[in-house]
Image 1 (cartoon, rainbow, N blue to C red):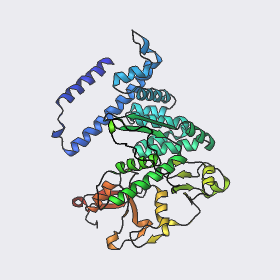
Image 2: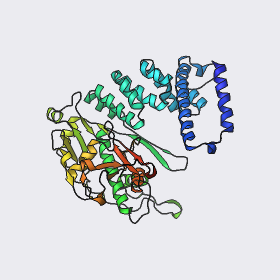
Image 3: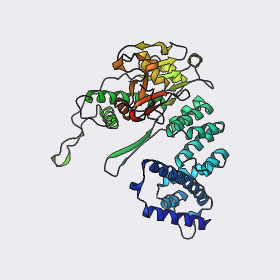
Image 4: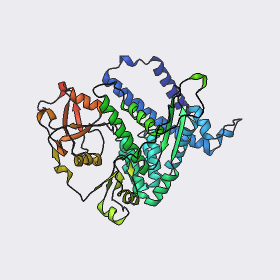
Length: 411
């Protein structure tokens, strides 16, 4: 075995030393990335299984080693954080009870991150193993959604709420460039409200700067909104800033009035009436995840929740001639799934509603059949003349073809 590993390493070192990517054509570059990706996934799987063996044999404490645990040894060996190595070992343990996923890892079909997500969800719901593997082949965004669905189908509402509440976290650290970074996890009931406020604030800044500038990425606008929300009403520090420097917090501000935030909830009529969701019934915030029916019923009395009950109005009949998107249609599009309509694109943030079948300039209405979500890059390409193909009847996605490659019957 070690002769094989050494020969593979030697071959890769030789290739890396002489590799010149500028000599590759576009097609060759795609092929090279695809092949190297397969190699990486195979290596990820081998490292995970070997890391588990390091833990099982307590190798980190033998032959004079004094590592704290297997994760520390493995992390140093592969150049990763101990936390990442710990997740790899945990995933390898779970694969012992998940033969179908283990076979996919051995075949190089799953990356380390994909294997972690699939194994975690399948451990909670073993019956979803095949569905999770199918979702992994579609990309990371569909996989995450499939993992949420798999857990929701196998978990009681009360148990899920307790698990999510116990798992809430917020961490910050200083990035390599000196900026503050962070990570947080909150329950979907709270997360839906946070996301709605961030999205609304981001769109507000985007619209204000659309014509006047300066133009920045949507992520920069979202950071401004986050700071605005967190620091609203923050008083000035008690002590003056050192060395006569300016007080970066500014003067104390009055606390803002209560903000009304629209949070869309998709809930089945029967679940709403009964007070809990049964298998196959929906109660979720689109783009966030399942929430408790009890929370929805409690919040229905407040202004910031819009409940889209599946026995309600047929939104496919709503139409309006003009750029304005009626409230019923906008809500319907959110519920149907905020995702770029272009094949192969899973973008779900900062999307634009586009007249897709008949352009607004040609009299196209704002209607269910004539509206799609586009991410900013794909919307820009369509504006530049790229051609939208018909909807895929299964996925609802569409191709986007350069004008010089469009089929003869394209318009």
